[in-house]
Every structure is written in structure tokens, then in C-alpha cells.
Image 1: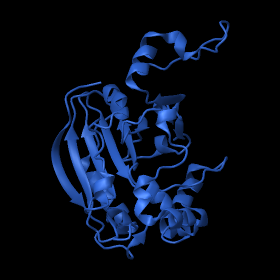
Image 2: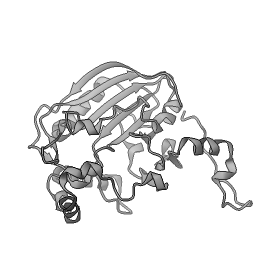
Image 3: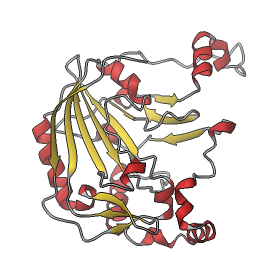
Image 4: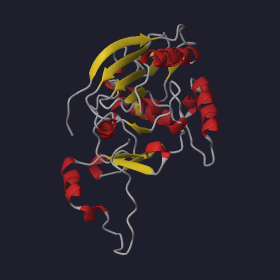
Length: 298
């Protein structure tokens, strides 16, 4: 999938206006996943006001200044967040793609919709923890790309978006200490040596053996999240790396249905495009195929 790239029209830095409470030490799990930060793109049926977004971001950072900080690595290999209010890069861009074309590009690391933090370099130089990239699309719509270092929370059945927001607030305010008590991770780190942490990946991640990973973004309430008074019509994670056998599940446009995106090796992907039967090898001939949503978001 190719196409003309997006073009940056304005770059600014948004700050909290004050430093955070002090450096934040990251956990072993954060070290393992530091090269896979969370990227998400919110799609709107109109372009968003960049000044209003920047103002809202500054207000949010004033409450949580840690996210205006920078990643740094100590000589002994520990990963920390320096809460010095270095600021969030805020880049306004124009794209030649329509909203549907841009949505299809979220599986590409070079989609142009998100400013990815180069995590390996962030450990050695002062790169941001959070980036924001509003993009004006060719058909008069808009996309808002965000990249954030990962914060993991348990999801319990029946939890409402409001309750989840309260959990998130508590996790952000208290995550400087409780997450460091993972004894098994600490013992593992002591056994292999802290200097080897960057050579490790989670045990379930094994593309060579076609180990499929699925992350669910459903029921997070992102379709109900208003920005500048407007709710997104669709959203999607944005690929940070081109990793085969990784996938994500999101609610479809308008919050209806489900959309599963699966990243496959190039040859297999080409085969599946021309061989529909390969997608349903175990389906009975009498089974009805589920309806497929329209290709256009608008």
C-alpha cells in the first residue's frame, strides 16, 4: 500500500506549565514493552481545530505533567521518566488521502498519521513520552494521531467507561510505586542481569512460529470521547512496527459491529486476497457468511 506522504504544516511544543513530582521509575514490564508504545488514531467527519486541541492538551498536562516528560535510561539499565515539562510535540499536518484511505493505512508504520517515538533511541537521548498529530484529510475530514508509552490496566466484565476512567486516574496517580512489587519479574531480571533486559521479549511473542497476538480495544468508550465538541466516527490502533501475526480488534465505524485487523506476511496476504475459500476452510457450506460493512467510513 503506497501513496503520497502527509506534509507537516505546523510544529509546536505544548507544555504543562510546571514540572511533575519527580522522576518516575518504570517497571520490568515497561522495559520489555518499551519498543512497542501505544499508538491510536481517532477519525472525525470534519477537521479539528488545532488551537483548541492544543489548549485542551495543555490543560490535561497541567493535571498530569508526567506525560510532558522524557524517557531516560540510567547507567545500570533502569528506565525512568524525567518529569521536567520538556513538553509534548504537537504537529499539524495535511494528507492527500481520504478518511477511508487513511483508515486503511493504520496498519503501516509509515502511515503518516502518528509521530512514532523511536523507543530504542529514546533510551539514550531525550525523546518524548507522548506525541500528538492532528491531520487534515483530503475529503474535508480529520484524523488525530496519539502515541503514548504503555500503561496496562486489568479489564473486568461489566466495567463501565466511567469506572474505567476512575481506574485509569488511580493508576496514573499511583503507578510510581505499586507496579514495582512484581517479584517474579524482579527475580528474572536479577537472574539474567539488568544489562540484558533489552534482549528480552514477552514469552508469547514468537512471529517465527506464527504465534498470533490479539489486542482488544473494544468497550473502551473511545467512540464516546468528544474532542472540540465532536465525537470520532472511527478509531484504530496504528502499527508501530511491521510485525506479522499481530492483530487488533476494534468496534466498527460509529461503534457498530467489529473490525479485526491482522498483519500477515506479504506472500500469505497476497494469496488470501485472491482465494476467498482459504479464509473459511472449516465453514459448512450451509453456513451464512456474516454481513460485511461498507468500505467507506462516510
